[in-house]
Length: 342
Image (tube, rainbow, N blue to C red; front, side):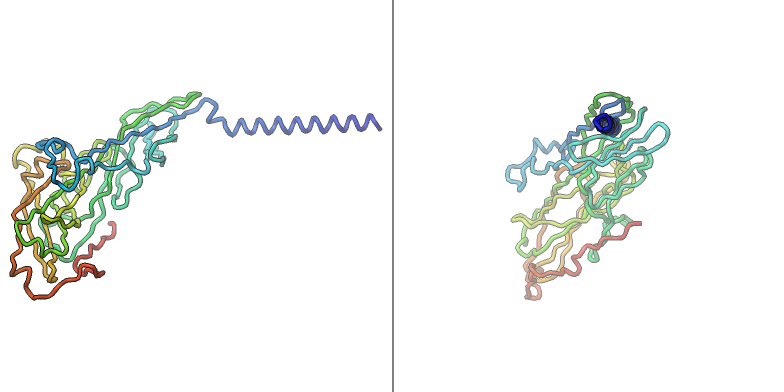
């Protein structure tokens, strides 16, 4: 009886040791990629928070003290997430989505191209991401029933969300025992124009204001930040100020920039136009249009655009003797209508 019991206990002990040994081997197997020899690339991100690029004007130096915003107020915030496209040497594409601070990038061993951009946009449409050289961003179309074209045939679009990007033409991933750090700086692909409509008289009659900036780039290439040759008109709302109206307008900048013809006078033949549409307190509309080519050419990627001398006469502002309630919903002609994607 004792002999039988001893063998039974030994059997249970051996079985337990076998179970524990098996469990440990299984845990090691599960963690093999992390603890063994494998590709482990950890992205650490940095965000370049610039809203304009100095060209003819350096607004950080020229900023007016009495303007509504400080220069640094216009700096964009870092994005909420990062999308990484890995283009492998054998023609495959792998995608990772990471938090804003970075994280582990999935990629095999070998030499690859890497494309980075933020993945938290609402109005931007990405296209051509199957290859790094064709990856572009554009923005969703929108229409406004009261808007009259500034440039014939231009698509009217929403402002793009803030977009950052970075590109590595060649990155070699190797198997290592410890993670490899990959620092990346994501730089702006969208820039801001602060637009000031300065009234000479009659701004007290303005109840609502909206604008449009025509001739801006329709697309931007993610790999190097150059813009496509097609132009679009960006629609936007304005805030009312004691001097008139103001807007902070985001865009990809001017088309075909940098291009070999840019900056050589008017040899590229491009014109840039600005619109302001106001709805007065009596419910009537008035539209102003401006040629801002000289200002935009000197500021291809963000800056300050000022138009002055605007006026609304007393006859225009008081015509009809009625009033318009700016607090009611349903602006009718003022509603911008998003267009379906092609």
